[in-house]
Image (cartoon, rainbow, N blue to C red):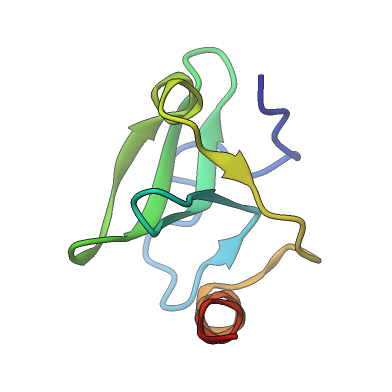
Length: 94
């Protein structure tokens, strides 16, 4: 079970141009990243920026990510989304 750090409730960063990322989950098989921005601890629903086939914002359930083999990257967070995406892209290129 993935233990998430404290982060804003759903809609807590709505309207921010460069929201803060509190956790990054990854799936090596898919080469996808979920940049978690908001979370409801009761339902385990998260709002995230997803980088996969296409880059988009959306809702995802932490339970579903866990069931599909995702794991949390060890990063010094929170940081702005633009900065964290750059770090992850550099890591993939290495």
